[in-house]
Image 1 (cartoon, rainbow, N blue to C red):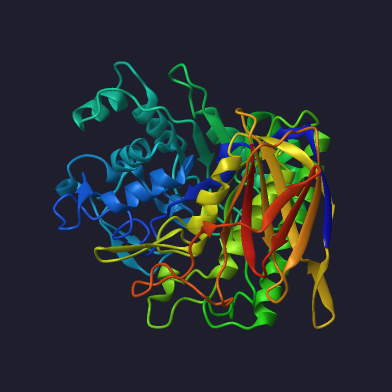
Image 2 (spheres, rainbow, N blue to C red):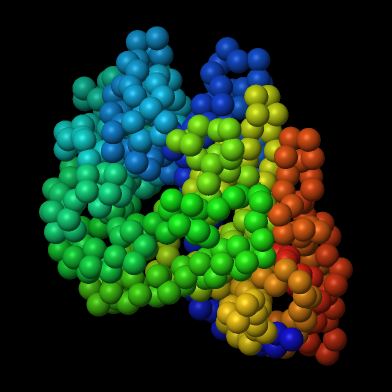
Length: 491
């Protein structure tokens, strides 16, 4: 049994809505076919953007979207992606499958996408193969409201008013695909490039530096020491890979052992954030600089028969649990974690949406994002509890993961994940500092750990009403089914 105490009058921080952010890269069918089909497509669209995907993203309350990469960002030259489409030069997408990129989805299309779904744009600039001038002119093109070569070009291309650009990343994975740089070298480059990410209008641009790969604590140390005062955020990338990078494992054909390993590796996110935050605290004790986990999620072997460079994988109940556990970790560290971006939005890695021609389905991960959207911009409440252990072959992890928040209307939400695929667990919580008149809930689970939605059966894993919770004398009692994600509403 998991015994808990919820102190409803003790606030630990604010869960920034951007923790529920997303990432869209020119990779496989994420952009083309997934988000963008072109205005002449038979698939219903708005200026080439799929209407079904737009509606699904609006319903999920997506707060922020990162683009154009990823590794693609550091070979992307933005000027090739504006103007008349027939005049846009093509390029080779060297990182992802060696396919031809026609640049039909560029700055205007991305900014329109963000406007249509109500998301803030987060653009990642090219440090690896670009120039300071190129980056500076991109910011001018997007944000300057006046007479200038870039602003006038934007107007000629059909956009009179500038856009608001809240977030800008100065390079991506510059320790790897973005240039194989040393931390010391990139820190100097960051100081140089960010200087020319100018503020042209009334809105500040939140500048994000390329941060560490997983547990590269030296990178964080160097960046914070040499460039911390010039940044608003420092990125962190960590993927949950159940196997090795050479043999990651199947997204659908896996055993309980692989289920256990996947969730254990997911929990490692807590240690990573804790250790990187400790370094950041030495240079930024006021926690002004955000830790931006702008690539996270599961990474498995590509689906058989697909282009291995397209990173197509399915999305099962296991991925739903991975998402829920990560969210709880991000909540816990909300004073330092200002944003997180799942990789990736459509058809790539741990996607929330899958498309196949005119068809579209929602994945279990999509449903968790929508269920957990109630936490966005809410106050994190003090929830302490002892979890029973989920034991597998002599190893153990906590069976129950939990988090609680209170929104501006005073409604309290408790989200729960039962990582144990075999056993129900009781969650008993003493409610302090809150009064409850109504209780309701929602659950996501299925009969098998490998269950997923496909185009023949799109609703195998979907949320349902949850009625295994009650309150007696100020004690909340929840019977938490095996392998499930549950959200309880107290009002």
